Length: 510
Image (cartoon, rainbow, N blue to C red):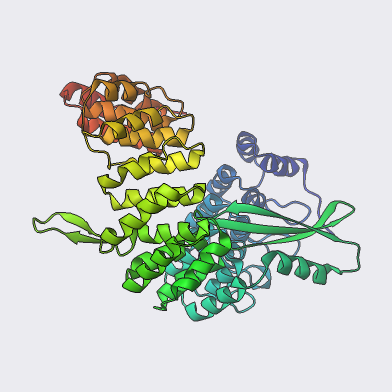
């Protein structure tokens, strides 16, 4: 017979469920056992772990809760596994730091790694590996984690496992290639209907969520409009195949890599980025010729892919004769005319973005007219890429470039303002117009923009930088970009007393 919990124990579980740290502390001090169980045999620690209540998890561990104590009706549920299945990485770290073994299996042989990989929780996988989890320990079905990650379609999870020496690369590559030609949404729908009965009156509903460098497909079975079951899978199989081919030394043809990128159709997704990166590293004449041919395509997406490839094809870090590092750009002389021509003809925003960034990567001031022509584009993402491309590219005497940066530093879009302000701050020229444009951004609602403006004024020894730097150093997130930028800007202050005062500014407690 299941024993009913006492009132105090019930209060403890309610406080954990509600995330009430202070109440939990009070109940523990009042003598409620930290290892109490509810009517289902569940412990407070397990409930806190699955609820992502990291503060309460730490409180319970400090009060003596056993990090490996299993609970549940059959005493088969581990707190670490409960946290891993939900991707609660900070909870996982707290349990591991308290002594939970990363590879300890719970009921049916599931480990925290098996749960995290199966759900595509890359950050949780990384935490488990950092604490010594075996990257090759098979799951309950006998499958290595890398193969499971390849099926899941999570490039980030695959990268984490590869960084920690996971084997089974050939099998994982075969799995990724299989899913490249499958319709993930249809596979999920048919799998659910087989499992729950196609004649049971279910209807399937699906949606797509952009995350983790790609798209996650979520399918649910509904009955009378109510969700009854569901499943999900990521779609980064192209990126995974490309990563694994690189690990195995397989040189995939340009057309195959390009097809993976075009299937996703988004230059910001991993399927596209990994294909482009693989071709950059290849850096051979065959790749240049293929990309050059695609520049003449009638398809803007193919042209955008070619522009991305030509942007950094064959770039390597070299050392100049005087010992200074310098880029090696073996295809620049032939790539730049192609990119400049595309810039003059491009109409689609995605193509303009690729071409502008490509011109910026080559760092040739002669390409400035083809970049500046798009500075007033109605698409904020195009203007953002223009601001990115102009960073470090505008010479001191290029009036049009400087005026464009000044105008873009007032853009309605925060990302455009941020990057334009950073580029303007980096221009070596010191003029009244540049200073006033930077000063106008010191109180920008975007803290990163304000920090870049303060840095630019500090470099110019403008006294208006001091107050902004003080505010940023005191008020911004100690681990955030704005405060880091402000802290770095302090080194430009020549007034020793002011510099020391700024260096001693501590973040306010929040």
